[in-house]
Length: 247
Image 1 (tube, rainbow, N blue to C red):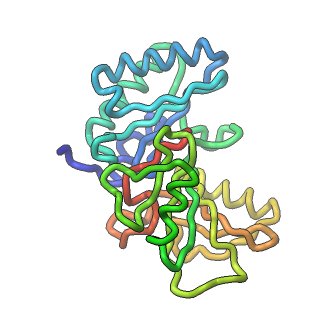
Image 2: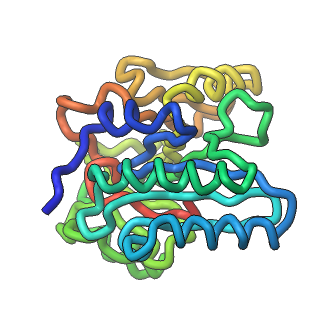
C-alpha cells in the first residue's frame, strides 16, 4: 500500500496549483462557460489521469464549472500519486486556457467544500442502522464498525457521522451541519455567518472547527484540516474514508 500523506503535507504540495485539502481529498474548480466546455475539461482530466482515473478521480460537471476531486480510493486517503495527478490535471487544464482554482476570495458564490451531517447520540450503535437504511447509505471503505460514519454510495449526499453524548440534551438540537472549507476560506465564511445574525459558540478547537449557531440556537460547525495532524482523532468522517458528496 502507498504511504498516506499528512494533511499538512498534502495541502502544502498542491496549494499553489489551486487545489485544497478537504476531508481526505484534494479538490478544485475549473470555471467554464457551457456544458460542452465542461465535458471537454472532463475528457482532458480523464486523459491526464490515464489508467488511474477510476481509482483516483471524481468529476462533477455543471454548465458553469467542473469540480475535480482526487483521492486514492482503495485506501480512502491521499497518497503521492494523488499529488502527481493534481499537477497533471492542472497542467492539462492550463493547456486548454483554463485554470484550477478553489474559488477562495474570488467573489464566487462559494469556495470548494464538503458538507457533513453530525448526529449526537447516546447509543450510536443502536441508531446507526436506522440512518443507514432510511438514507440508503453505506459504510465507508474499511470503516464498517457500529459507530463509524456513513456515506452515500453514489456520491450525491453529504456524509453522516455520529458524536457520542454523555447525557441527554432535550433542549438542544442533536443534528448539526459540518461545513468543511479550505483553510483560507474559514475566516471569511465565519465573518459572513456572524454578520448574518449568527453567534460564535466556541472557538476552543479552532482552526479544526468553530461552533456557530443561528439566532434560535441551531448549530453548525465550520471546519478545516488544520490542527488535526498529530491530534486525537475527531469523531467525524475526516478520520475514515472520505465521503463522496456531490463533492
